[in-house]
Length: 106
Length: 243
Image 1 (cartoon, rainbow over the protein chains, first blue to last red):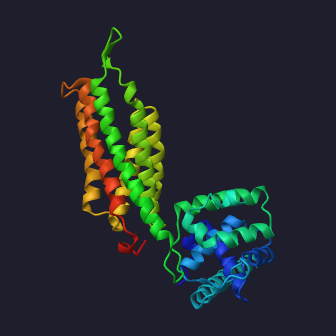
Image 2 (image 1 turned 180 degrees about the vertical axis):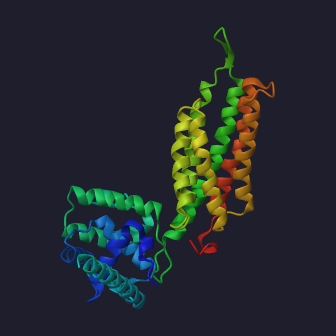
Image 3 (image 1 turned 45 degrees about the horizontal axis):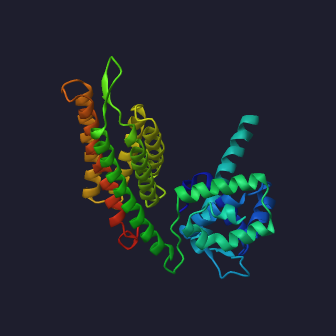
């Protein structure tokens, strides 16, 4: 289900974008500011739209009707499933790592 | 800002141009943003995404016209290569005391034009390859860059040696995903194979063809131009929905 790693350098920005859209539709500028708040680093316009076009092509997000030239995007069911799978994978990785660190610290 | 937008392919601009400009108006780009936009434009050209919007992509019609135009130009490049050989054959013999050779400098502009047109054709063909066909896409860039360099310095044959695998990569990728038939692939690979075999035979001294023979082996290279040109003329997006 989750083929975000195939996005290459757009994988991490794409994950942040899916995360940003998980609480409702947003347009490009709102996604950009939200991603900066989530990750602590800014997302360049070229990277943002490179990731958006990949996510849209693969059906993870869909474009809504434009609002005064700004076009909002929303998460699709496939996008939500993919995001959940990615987050579960990260949670498993974190738990494994923390458990091993705990064992090593004893 | 519109200058930055023009770096992107037309299909991309048709789809994202308005909202992209609106974004840049909301947050004027600094230097790093501008570099990011340039990088994004390069990515959009190397990895065009097939947009999943329900409406047909209006760029397809434009793209079809561009394919025909580029395909015709590549065939014109084949004619340029023929002109190179004709001009070379008619060039006066010059002797510097030690060797006698033909002064083919008048043919050089045609040679540059031929390689430049082939480069355009290869890059246009690579544009139809899916983003997963990285070998074919990278091969097109390699062949275009080194092919044009070779046209500027034809005596540095190593440049064409480097470009050749790039052309092969494009041909293999185009055949594999089905945008080229056996005809185009055969012309390109056959042209390369025959010309290289002939070149090796001539250069090894197994024949006594001399300089004229050395030049005429490139005649077989026109098959490469014809293959790439025909591939673009025959390309139709409607036949290849898997793009």
